[in-house]
Length: 393
Ligand code: FEO
Image (cartoon, rainbow, N blue to C red):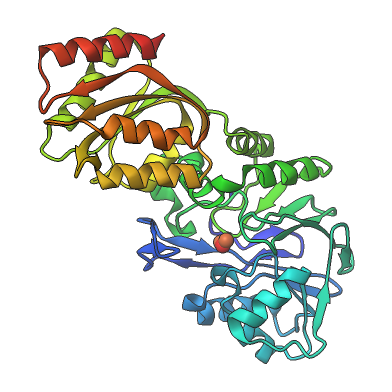
């Protein structure tokens, strides 16, 4: 991986920006190490700029672009993805470079008009699957990648230097200038990014991977996160696992919420028992206190999950209902799930969790559901021990 290094290959440069002030990406995802909005320039006989950046960072990006151009003028602006974190500076760019042609998919045109009331006045070149754009020694081949993660998305491949410009695919949370603070490695924040942003679109990611297999790829230039230069087969392989909804690791993820601490006690006791009985990896999350999007990530990461929740208002504690809904939206599937319910006089949480899981594909509920009547007792410990034995298998 290369971090903040604007040279990618001869004539190909990184001109993106970091956003270390942003609190929530897309207004919802925590990004404690910020976010990068990546953008690239290819300086050849012709010059192509590949994507702009979020409007929050327009001035900085324009300066990066100026520095890179060295007085030349761009011929093309290739727009792989119209979401505002990448198109926020298109208007300013078009005003500054009035002779530059926009290169994008047909769907992107209407989206740009809707977002920014842009008028292209003949300055647009629409490309479709297999079209190419020759810049001299570099030539971009376009591959449509709809719904990764908007409909207009395309990626491009530069045969000369074997570079895949991959749009949101292979992206990662975190500013490039803070990569060295991310001691968990690329996969952790790339996984949280993938499942929360692209998770719903596994079939489309599979399509893209199939198309990409025709290319010899040495470098992946995504729109977020580091440029990937080493061990490309690892990144392609892990995206294959994620997009097939296969577990990445064997292990048990326990997600709980708790009103007065009793359900939390049960969840943590189960983790303790599993650890005593086996060396199976266990990860525990309080979905109220911990980042719920990290919980989504862990649900997909492991092959087994346990949900522990109290009954509330004759229904399920709302945060667990929200978590299950998030999993459903992200197409959670193909997993074993065990349930722990709590209810002081009429437990309903198990029934509600089961109903929600029933709307997801290929979920096996591990029987029996453990029921806690208010607090953890000796009999509960026995039930948790049996559940642990079943889960460990
Ligand atoms: Fe990075 Fe889908 O925008």
